[in-house]
Length: 228
Image (tube, rainbow, N blue to C red; front, side):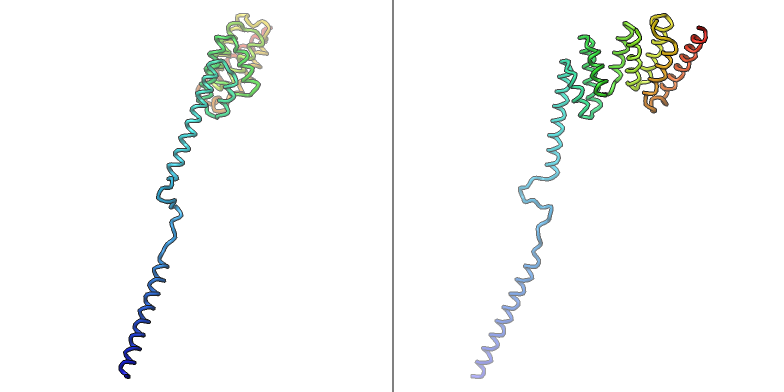
């Protein structure tokens, strides 16, 4: 009888120990479960890098479409396309649109309108527009157009364009094609517009040649004034 009682207690003890270790094993395995990685978006989630690349591609396509639209409008003589091109802050696109508008203005005799639009909206003058203005002035030089030609040449920030315009104005003055412009006025125009050029352009190699041209022009105009 005693033997049976002891045997029963042993069985109960063994079963208790088994339950203890079983419960502990379950608790340990639960603690080892890690939370999902913050970068994990599911098996079928979209890759963030590919999503950004897609958005970039869409934005690039939109910019290309807008650029194409600006150019098409410029070819049709729509001056407001220049304002939109400037809004994009793309210097290459701006020059393309302005070049197209200059070409249209040359054929349609609307250069003055283009000049006025650029001046009123304080838009950038490029080499193409400056040369068109200078060539128009050369066809019929007079007091007002001389000042405009020098002004636009300076706004182009191109030392060679400005130097050539100064040389042309001086030649017209020598030959009497600017009878209503005095030597003193011409010198004031040369010097005043010169400072519209950027410091980078004034200090360049072409700027050095321009300064020598201006020095020579000043001497000639001063001598002519002294002889009066």
